[in-house]
Length: 143
Image (cartoon, rainbow, N blue to C red; front, side, top):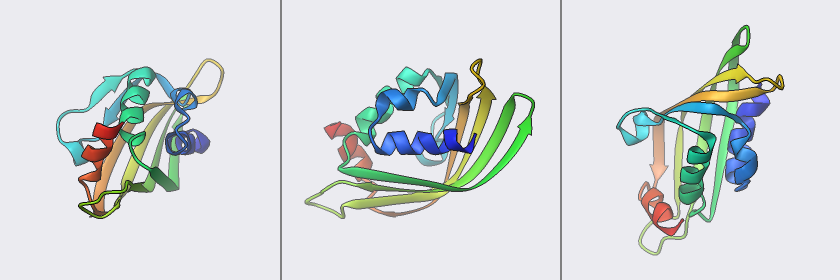
């Protein structure tokens, strides 16, 4: 189950978009409001990967480290909380090439019909950042 959470970061950083889709349940509640504002969204794996590939694909490189996993189980559901640090690199002639973000993830997981764990919800809580946040907009425009 921790491996499923790790694979989300692994596949995203390696731009393995088809493999990334496989870590998600059919519907996923994404909450990135601590960073972006707005409201959480319920999306399909295809819509998540389409959006992430456009933004993350615009960076020269990304590295999402996910650690200190704490897991609770209840039948065929689980909650995994973990710390993260995400570094984003993009050459920028007008600013620093790095933006690093840290905080916590809460992953809600369900056991699928094939007995594998799938992510049904992600709450990302950003608690600190360093570097050039403008890289996100530049990467999205490039991706």
